[in-house]
Image 1: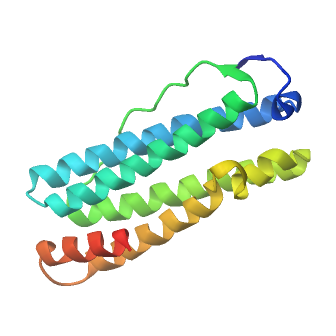
Image 2: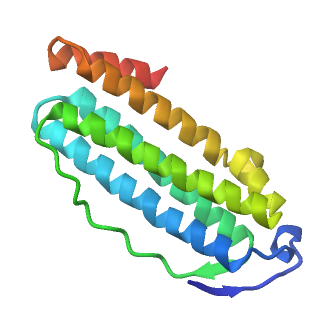
Amino acid sequence: MKLKQKPENNSTKNIELSENMIEALIKQISHELHNYTLYKTFANYFGTCGLNLLREYYLGRADEELLHHNWIVTYLEDRGVFFKYPAVTEITEEFDDHLDVFELTVAVEEETTKLIYDIVNLAQKEGDWLTFAWLMKDGGSELLNEQLEELSISNLALDIASQDGSWFEKERAILSAYKK
C-alpha cells in the first residue's frame, strides 16, 4: 500500500514506519471514513424522521470521525509517507428502528476500538515508540483516548435510547450528554 517514504531533514521523517504500520494506519483511514459516512447516514435518517437533535448528534459524531481521519493523514504526511487513498466500504448496515441505530453505533465503536488497540499493540511490538506516543497523546492526536471516550458516549446514548419515553425527550438527553 505504501508508495513512497522520503526521509528528509525533519527528525520524525528520518524514523521510517514499517510496512505493517503504514498498512494498519491506511486501513484505519478507510475505517474512519466509513464511520464518517455511516454517521452522516444516521444523521440523514433522523433528520427525515423529524428528530433534529439526533440529526445534530450524529453530524457531530461524523465530524469526530473526520477529525480522526485527519490526524492519521497528517501523521503519515509528517512521517514522509506518500500513499493512495484507500477505498471506503459501502454502507451496508441495516436498521429497522431508532434503537437499532444506537446499537449499531456501539458495535461500530467497539470495532474501531479493537482496530486502534491493534495499532497500539503493533507499535509496541515493533518498538515504534513515536507512533505509540502519538496514539496515546503526543502530536495532538490522542487517538486512543478519544476512541475510548467515543465508546463511552455511544454506550450512554444507547442506555438513554433504551429507556421508556418519547424520542423527543430522549434526543434532548442524548444531545445534552454528548455536549458535556
